[in-house]
Amino acid sequence: MIHSVNGLDVHILEAGYESPGRPLALLLHGFPDLAYGWRHLIPILADAGYHVVAPDQRGFGRTTGWVNGYDAPLAPFSVLNMTRDALGLVSALGYRRTTMLVGHDFGSPVAAYCALARPDVFPSVVLMSAPFPGPPAFPFNTADSEAAPAQPNNESQKLAAALAALDPPREYYQQYLSTRGANDDLWHPPQGLHAFLRAFFYVKSADWPGNAPHPLKGRTAADLAQMPTYYVMELGKTMSQTVAASQPSAAEIAACKWLTEPELAVYTEEYGRTGFQGALQAYRVFSDPELNAELRLFSGRTIDVPSLFIGGKNDWGTYAAPGALDLMTTKAATKMAGVELIDGAGHWIQQEQPARLGTLLLTFIKEAGGADHTNR
Image 1 (tube, rainbow, N blue to C red):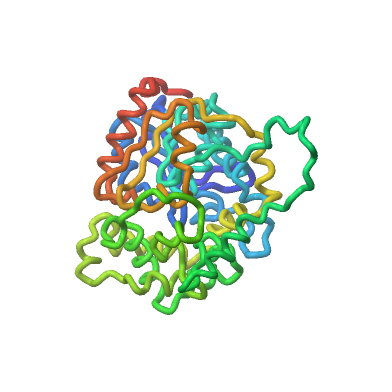
Image 2: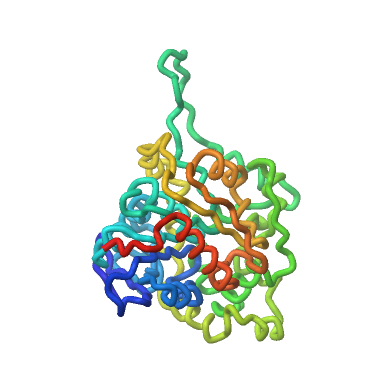
C-alpha cells in the first residue's frame, strides 16, 4: 500500500485494517532495517485488536520521493522532517492520533520527537534500542555572565582524533557511515551483499557470543573502545570487512529461525535495488550542526506522555551513547514506565523476541490507558 505524505509516496505494511475503528499502532524501523523488520510483531498486535502500520522510512525500501545520492540535500532527512513524515502518515490514514507508537534504532529519535512535539497526536511512545537523552539545550542563565567568545563545537573531531590515536587505531561507526565511500562499501562488498547482511544481522544479535554489553563511564576513546568493532571499528576497515570476521557457519544460519534465508533475501533484494545512501543520510544529519540547530526549538522540553524503553540484554545499543539512558530516565521523559531489557535479544528485538516484545507493548498500553480508544 502506498500513501502520499510530506512529498513522499510512503510504502507501508499493515494488518488489522479490515475492521474499521481499530486503534492505530505505528511502528518506525531503523538502520539497516525496513518495514519488513516488524513482520513477526505485526500479526501479534493485529490479533490484539490494532490497526498496525509499519512504513518504509524516508530513504528506505519502496518509499519513493526522496533524492538518492551522496550529494543530495540532507535537509529532507532531518529528524524533524522525518517526524513530519510520521505525523503526515497518521493523518493520511484517517486518524487523529496513534494509540501505540514504537520506534526502533533510528526510528527511536523520530518517535521521541513525535511525542515531544505533538503529544496530542502521539499520546504514548515506546523507544527501542536507542535511549533519548532529550533535545539539545540552550545554555541557561547567561544574561549577566561575562560574554565568552563563541567556540566551535568540535567534540566529535576531538573524539575522532582520540580514537585514531589508540592502538590499534579506531573509528566510531557513525563517522564511517557518514563518508562518501560507505554506500558502495555496503552495497558491493567483497563477500556479496547477502553474506554481508547475514553477518551484520548476526553480530548485532543475541546469537553472536561476543555481545556482553554494559554501561560505559563516559564518551572517551578508551570507554568507547570497549564496544565491539561493529560499533567502534578498526580505522581503515570497511563495515563489510569488519563483520566478515564473524560470518556465521552454515549450521548457525540454518538454526536462525528469526531471520531465515528467504527472509534475508527480502533485505538483499531491496538493498540490492536501492543501495544504502538514503538509509545513510540520517547519520550525516547527526554530524551537521545546521540541521541539528532546529532541535533547539525544544530546548528544555521533556516527553510528558507515558513512555517505555525496551532493549535487548545482548544489545550494545542501550549503552552506545554513554549517559543517554540515565538522562532519559531521570530528565528527558517525565512519565517513563521503566526500562525493559529482553532476554535472548540483541539489537533486532522485534525479530529475535517478538512474542515477549508484544506482551510488553500490550501491557504498557493497557497501563497507559490507551487500549480502549479508537482515536479516529
